[in-house]
Amino acid sequence: MGLTSPPAAVVLDALAAPRDPGLDEAVGPGAAQRLRRELRAMARRWAALAAPGRAFEATSPAAAVLALDGHDGPVVLVAPDVPSLSHEHARATFDDLREGIGVIVGSGHDARPFLVGLASADADLIELTAGPFEPLFGAALERGLTLSMIRHERRLASAGDALALALDPLAPAALVAELGWLRPGAPGGGRAGARRRAS
Image (cartoon, rainbow, N blue to C red; front, side):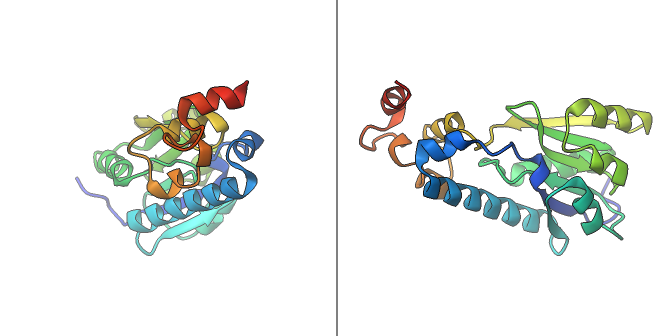
């Protein structure tokens, strides 16, 4: 089974975690700003590859609905704060859509979605994407849609997230470069540095 029409992708700010000042304290305000900027750039590139010619950005679900006006195919909404976002997430989402799944969700470690795939640009469902899972799943079930989950991922929003990323051997180099003392091998870095910083 194939997709009936080309998908659209939206980098949706409302799917991101709230800004945590702890990240700025851990890596410095300048580095934190560069990290957020690079994360957004990664999400933009992901959306452009996932939906060539149909990639958008929106701050809120309402803005996403406006951006998708006239689009009647499947939609993938993605947060701009997930370092591990990759083609595997797009593949898993589109595979489920091809199988007739109506709503696909990827959860962050904070139990909020970082990715939502929808079989169509249903404005009411899009409006529910930025909140807890239950209302979105409830609305999908009321419509008779099937649901699926893809693998969960960790965001980069807090000092703890930054330390976890610094210790991840598969982390994107452009992000790790901004982690300063958190990097293993950096003076006072890694777990020992984290313990000293916390004390």
